[in-house]
Image (cartoon, rainbow, N blue to C red; front, side, top):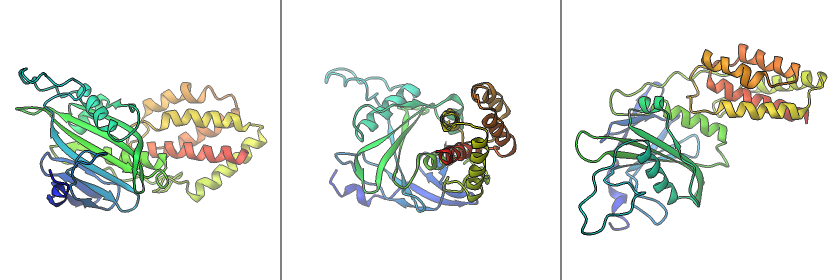
Length: 319
């Protein structure tokens, strides 16, 4: 392939308007997702020394975020050595989590130093995305591309009626200078909740407003004022900043799971929070404040993540 060959191919992606936002659709496979904001398609481009070729992509307008996509038939596992020249061709690999994991390593290795940590999708995610295996890794780019210095490699694999399984590789690039980890969790979570390979497109849940955070996952003025009041209450109760910081760290471990931002914080999750999060808090005033927030204001995972930022702000007020 010549250097310019890939620049003039027509993108297999198209954008459809929906009430919840633009739906990006791969017309070959039926993979689609609702983008978390308006944007534009980007054309295919060829392989380079630091990147595989991509069939096209979508660039958000509101934030420095770009999603690139490629589709391929997987005739061999990249982790396994190539067969000898005179050996019969190997049988096609099975579409499962192991294959998704190995493909994720294969593509991530081209983009970052060292072997990245790869996470496998849970069973409920495979069902939601209509795939047989999925894996992802997030890492700093070895060679930043303009404003982009961080990337998530998200690999989906799916068996076909005949022939080798297919893989869809999504490379999600963003700028850590302008997109905080909390905001990335929000944007990526909203995309993943509508991700589906084939079948009826999924409808995005209406975005629930949060007392704690705005669309950029920054604290609202009301939440900042409430954090200052909470800091005053904790100071009056002689609650140390260290105790609050420990609780903030504990909430962070629970809040940033793979659950979509608008998913409700289910009752079974709330039951787990009492022994795992609330009971270890030795300061009565802090424990009572968090119990109050969970009952009155935390309805969704976005709220739960906002609670983490809210308590972090209160902790800084105590400093």
